[in-house]
Length: 230
Image 1 (cartoon, rainbow, N blue to C red):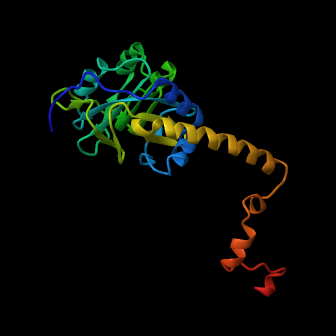
Image 2 (cartoon, rainbow, N blue to C red):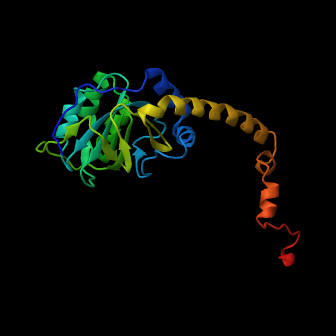
Image 3 (tube, helix red, strand yellow):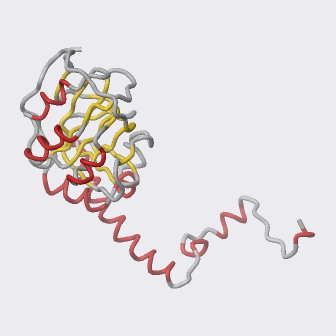
């Protein structure tokens, strides 16, 4: 591993990020072909948070948050900090003071495949964090890692400048090269779902709206009128 900081990275366009922030994780995930989701253990530290931003990435050593401090300088408005570790770790690598520094840079949130601490203070600040765990265990500043290199975070490859969206449903990574296309597909999906929502609310069954009856019969599903007919 090279211990390096990449200062200048290409980022997804701001308008695309705004669109993906508006559609939500589940819709973006579906629009991208049901790929890109981080492991479901990545949970928000407070309910209702929803963000999307351009990834500034950190590769950190377990129990060591030195490179998070290094990464703050490379962040700008609209970024989301994404932290992967060289091995599994649950230590509380991020808390109120680092959040305060990131807020001053305009960072919209943090995704960290490790522990987070100071949950009460972070909630009061309104700074959203998705983490592997919550832990009061502190960390050291002793070993170098890297900033703005490709990292694996919770099972997904994140390249600097990718779009990362996160909400109560989880975290999804949209590669920068496909972000515009995924945003357009996600918007269309949202519009289609609005029509379906109205039909279902009126009492129409999904069985009929999705034309499921014939394929169900072909698959062998049989209806009987009485338990004794089974």
